[in-house]
Amino acid sequence: MLPSFFESVLQLIVRTSTDLPPDVRAAMKTALHGEPEGTRASQALTIIAQNIDLAVDNEGAICQDTGMPTFEVKTPVGANQIWMRRQIREAVAEATRRGKLRPNSVDSITGKNSGDNLGPGTPIVHFDQWEKDEIEIRLILKGGGCENTNAQYAVPVELPHLGRADRTLDGVRKCILHAVWQAQGKGCSPGAVGVCVGGDRTSGYLHAKEQLFRPLDDVNADPRLAELEASIMSTVNDLEIGPMGFGGKVTLIGCKIGALNRLPASFFVSVAYDCWAFRRLGVVLDASTGAIDRWLYRDPAHPIIPMLDQAGFTRTGREVALEAPLSEADVRALKVGDVVMISGRMFTGRDAVHSHLMKHEPPVDMRGSVLYHCGPVVVKEGDGWRVTAAGPTTSIREEPYQGEIIKRYGVRAVIGKGGMGAKTLAAMKDHGAVYLNAIGGAAQFYARAIKKVADVSLMEFGTPEAMWHLEVEDFPAIVTMDAHGNSLHKDIEQESGQHLETIGV
Ligand code: SF4
Image (cartoon, helix red, strand yellow):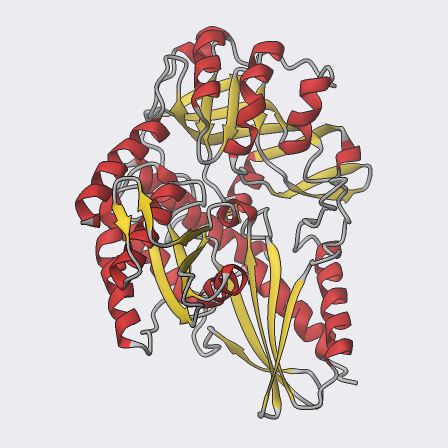
C-alpha cells in the first residue's frame, strides 16, 4: 500500500490542531488592530493572539475542544478507499494518544467516552474520486461551542428584529445576520460562517460546512454570491457583538456562501458557524507513496509570523486579585466589566458533573469555590497529571442546573464562556455569586495559569468530564454577570438587536 500515508495524515491532524492557517492568522491580526487598546475586546483578542503563538511553540492544541475531525478526501480512480479510511481512523487514535486531540467521541445514549475519538460517526470522512494522479486530504476541526450555534432556516420566515425573510437573496442575507446575532459570543467570536442556500436539510448543512474549506480571502466565483458575501462583511460588524460577545468592532472574520438546487417546495438557508479557532488545513499526497507533496492553505516559503511582538497579558492596573476560596463579600464587591486575576483552587465541571451534582452530594467541599466550565486535555505524568489545554466551554448548557448548584453548595464564582441565563443570574443575586467570562478557545494560555493538578474526582466520567482540582495563579477573566443582577450578555444581546434592526432593513 502507501507506506507514508499514515504518517502524512498524522502530520495533517497535528498541524491542523496546533497551527492556524495564514488566512485565519491574517484575519485575526486585522481584528486585533481593529479594537481600541485597553478595551475588553482588545484584551480578549490579545489573549487569543498569545494563545495562537503558544500553541505553535508548544505544538499544543489551540483549543481544548479539538472538535469533530472532518476529512474531505479526493482520490485517483481505483484507489483503495476502504484501506485509507482505516488508516485515517488509526491516525486519529494516535493523535489522541499523543494529546493533540482531546478524547471527544461519546456514546450518545450512555455518554461514555470512547477515549480514542473513534466511534459510530467519528471521525467524519467523505471520499470523492477525481481524475488526477494525486490524493488530496482536507481536514477541519470544528468544536462543539460553535457547532451548537449553527442555524437552519426554512424561508419564508419571520425573524426577530428583521421581519420577514423571503425566498430571495435579501431573505438569505437576513437569515445570515440573524444567525450571527443569535450566536452572540457563544461560538467564540469573532467567527466565520459557511452558508448554503438551498439543498435539503442534510445536504444544506453539509454544503454550508464545506464552504469553510474556502480561504477567507478568496472571492466567490458566482458574482451574485460574491456580492452577498461582501454585503454581509461590510455590515455585520456594526452589530457590535465583538470578540467573545463582550461588545466591540469585530464580530465576524469571514462569510462564504454556496448554493445547491432545491425542491420547489423547500427553501433552506443553512449556516455553519466556526469560531476564531478556525482549524483547517490540507495536504496533497503522492499517489504512489502517500508522502506529503505540498500543503494547502500554507506557503512553506513563508515562515509563521507571530501574532504578538511581546508575550504576556496586558495589565491595565485595574485588575482585581482574588484568592479562592472566595467569601460572599469578595464577590458582592465585583461588578460587570471588572477584570479579575484568580489564584488558589478551582474545580472543573461540565455536563456530567452538573448532572451528577443535582442528584448527589459533591465529592469536595464547594463552599466558596470557583467552578470552571472546562473539559481540559490532561496527560498522565508519573503518578500525577499535567494539563496541556484548558479553555472554557460554553456555559449556557448548564443553565438548567447552575442556579440550584450555587444555592445548594455555596459556589461563589462560575467561570465559562458565552454567559448564562436569567435563572442563574437570579441565583447569583440571591446567594452571592458571579459569572466570570474566560476567553473561549484560549486553551494554551489558560493551561499556563494552572500550576498544579492537586487531585481529580469523578474520573468515571472520562477525562474531559471529570472534576479536576486545579491550583491556579493569576488566571484572568472578566466579570460579565455580577451579584447585583447585571449581565453584560443580556445588555449586548439587546443592544445588538437594535443594531440588527438598523442594518437589517
Ligand atoms: S474556540 Fe470556542 S467554539 Fe471554538 S472549539 Fe474552542 S471552545 Fe469551541
